[in-house]
Length: 335
Ligand code: KG4
Ligand code: ZN
Image (spheres, rainbow, N blue to C red):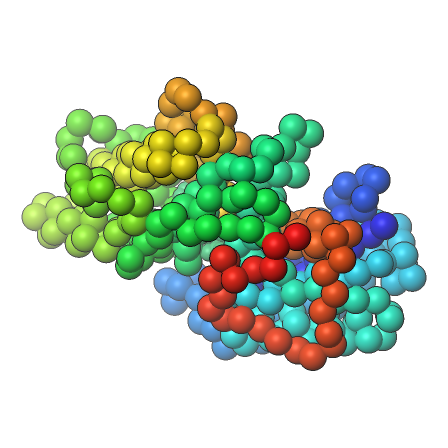
């Protein structure tokens, strides 16, 4: 059984094929970073137009790489949300059109469930129930995952997502886009002791996050230094990363304690952060799971895999084209 996955929710076109027996047999990713970089963020209309150019050729290429034809494909999975409405509509329209032509079902997949399930694509996956921290450019959420498709929101960011904060701070420091990998790179040369930034919302009880004040704190620090040198940038990036990672560590510990669970899954773009993985790995009392580096940021593989898991459990969508730019994960159908 083979499921093709199409991801077009933001600035990456991903197309992959997941085979029940052989796992990933094609995994293609095209990043639009070159298009959006000069604007310091994603320009939605340009993103949609580029997905239109790239998706179908990538579908043909994925079939060729996997050594199969359209007749071997049993279902088409596409990202139905959350994300940019125009970009989502491109993937949804292509998926539904192919489904009609190839006479197979097309399944709308929740992008964040794709991120989550990417962390379970291993030989020894976590067993439900577990706590998941989903950290990306648009989301910072702690979820209690009781079964496939059954998610209870424990806490989330009340303002910026962690990835968004990385991107904005990188911009303030004159670093490139996306900011997460850039901050992580320059922070390696930083002095951990020079600045200590606040760990927002850790003194109050609760599992929500807030990164907007931390961002302002960084801006004030930059403004306080007359001439910002390379070392200053490294030290600020380092203090910022320390603060985000430490805040996440505290909140994850709290979520595990509150739920009484002993498995933590981290997923989404920010879960690629090495320091975050190392700090959580050093904590006691729970098992940590995270996706392979290549599966942390947006990709088609996670959509193909999430689609495969829903297809074998009987999810069947109609052929009308529906996308959900905002889509709370706890509204998903339990499998
Ligand atoms: O999951 P993702 O690719 O897209 C969304 O669904 O939003 O996440 C992208 C986010 C960006 O904000 C990017 O800066 C961040 O993930 N990111 C990182 C790292 N790699 C990507 N943040 C911190 N450290 C990283 N190594
Ligand atoms: Zn994502």
